Image (cartoon, rainbow, N blue to C red; front, side, top):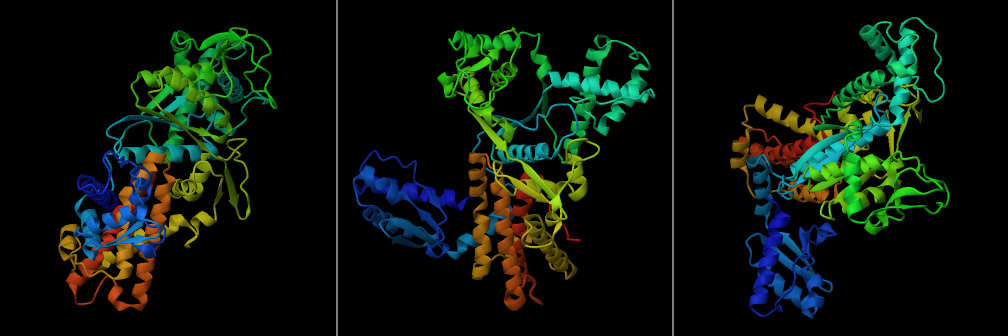
Amino acid sequence: MNIFADIRVLVISSLEEMTRTGVLPEGLDFANVAVEPPRDAAHGDLATNAAMVLAKPAKMKPRDIADALAGLLAADDRVELAEVAGPGFLNLRLNAQVWTQVVDAVLSNASFGQSNMGAGKKVNVEYVSANPTGPLHVGHTRGAVFGDALASLLDYAGYDVTREYYINDGGAQVDVLARSVYLRYLEAHGQEVAFEDGTYPGDYLIDVGEALKAKVGDEYLGKEEAHWLADIRVFATEAMMDLIRSDLAALGIEMDVFFSEKSLYGTGRIEGALAQLDDQGLIYEGVLEPPKGKKPEDWEPREQTLFKSTDHGDDVDRPVKKSDGSWTYFAPDIAYHFDKVERGFDELIDVFGADHGGYVKRMKAAVSALSAGKVPLDIKLTQLVKLFKNGEPFKMSKRAGTFVTLRDVVEQVGPDVTRFVMLTRKNDAPLDFDFDKVLEQSKDNPVFYVQYACARINSVLRKADEQGIAVDDATLRAALGTDLHEAEVAVAKKLSEWPRQVEIAARTNEPHRIAFYLYDLAADLHALWNRGNDDLALRFIQDGDAATSQAKIALIRAVFIVISAGLGILGVTPAKEMR
């Protein structure tokens, strides 16, 4: 049950009836007709823009359309009042039985709120994709949580989702990793070492050096780099990916695919992707104009092989091969995304850090060209996270050497708090993560506020069970009535918005909307709870009246089901009780 979608069907069928009877002209497009909450809740339960969007193409006054439409809508059993306001806004007030039906729908349908909007379309969500040179840091944490929640949201909305991690194991940074591990290997043999600029001094490589010693003994001692570099590259990369998988597991994240950048080299796959672009006349030899301001890494004042990305919406054409014949960073990324297109995905989503903003247009241009414009690519940028503790910026991790790790955060506050807090801001807005505030038990802490709602509901269910009141969903459904108090109606109305919120969040690729909705639903639950402190008739357990108790418990049990579903999308476990 999606009351907004259901009433929209009623509105459209009424408009079609108006067309059949000649009130409206033939051929009108109803695609932009919407049903949504009114801007002011005092105006009603739902509102439709039908008269406003149809007035111009119908060559009619909006109020004339609204008056005729109101009469048809009011004839439906679900509509108590259809009222025209202003120049042609149409507000609807629904009968009380509708809100009881919403609660019944939640209790009777385990998939309430789930959508078939995605229609099984194959979507690839690539996120994290950190260089395999160390543990994940707090910036990766935000991207990991956002990407994982987005993947879960799309799955909930009916898409066939693949979670993917791109291993950047083909660049020079892996050589630096190998040299850093070699230093730890020497250290494991009792030698004094010095970490020069450009190497990774973090303690996390101590164990890797020890493991390398255990594997090869003294084989690499005193040998030239050419003897051991390739082998240690592989060994170190595998060790770092094991560490990264472990970090992700600490947040409850599992990837479906780990794709190696190295697999693109020496296999003809980069050449094949560029050949596809060349066949379209999009590859040429040329010299780019010097950029204004800071020069990008791939700019050279000499002839290079360029991708004509401006033909697909980019600001400038982009180099794919340097003048010395080596690939730019962009070339394997083109090949990687071509691989995604060839795997048959209908949509692609990349989650990048804010520092990759300059990559958005070129990457979209490449996918547009490689898929003939058929596969959309949405790139979501996650902004920086600022950490605070005791009112001060949180210092770097000694273990990592230069940054605060994902493990540092999870060990401080736990995975549930970490995940929820990372989703309390839109992905492209900066986020302040205060270790003290995220553990604070107050309304200002959304994690606590939502989990406290779960704990309160569970406490009522336990108390009812102790008093011998049956609280299974079938019994609660049977006890439902239509005489809801206005405070109970407010909760039921918020429940009715869940399917709509899921579809909006999935359509915009914005999982933070789910966190916002859960906070609002929890607020309505807490408001109802607090009113019960003053009005005994609003308390969930009515002494000596099991049937009335069950009717009231049905409502909050429905709240728990929806909050649990929302937290499930966010990757958070609902609280049974608060400590």
